[in-house]
Length: 180
Image 1 (cartoon, rainbow, N blue to C red):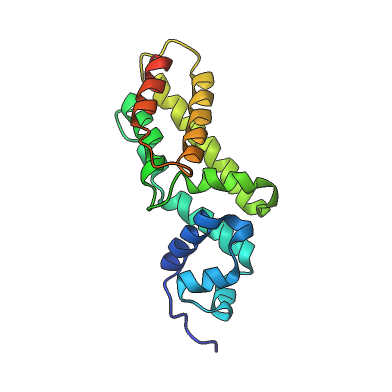
Image 2 (cartoon, rainbow, N blue to C red):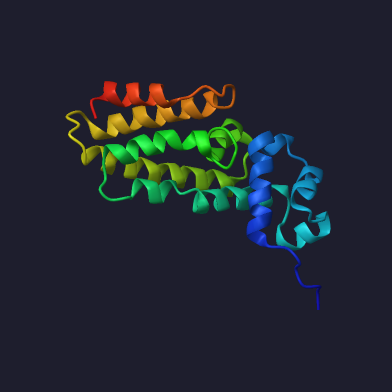
């Protein structure tokens, strides 16, 4: 019989998410993961197959605990949810931008399961954003508006990696220009 696990999986995933968020998949080493979690390599490998599996579990943990889906389903649907969604990147777990959006920069090297999770997550977000747009007085094409919001949000997430500037005015101006 193996030794019992002496760490909390959620705490490990929170720590690994932070490490991958800071450095990305390619630049995060197993040594970094051991250091940030306080769990040694052999214990990690009893829970996870390899670094890719740890990354995939971190993405899944972030998606499940990030609150984006809950935010976009808050009643009443509409402009408030859209604004809160755009403002979310500035306050994510002490990091800048969105972990999922930042991870897309390395999409070519991500594990297939992580790619599938990210694509599925984006699809859900796109559907929910469109529902929120339809709940406003927006007179244009909701799907095209959703695409613009996602593109703008991706830009904000990347910009937040380089600056501490407030995004509030940009977000308010953008939403106003959309006519929502």
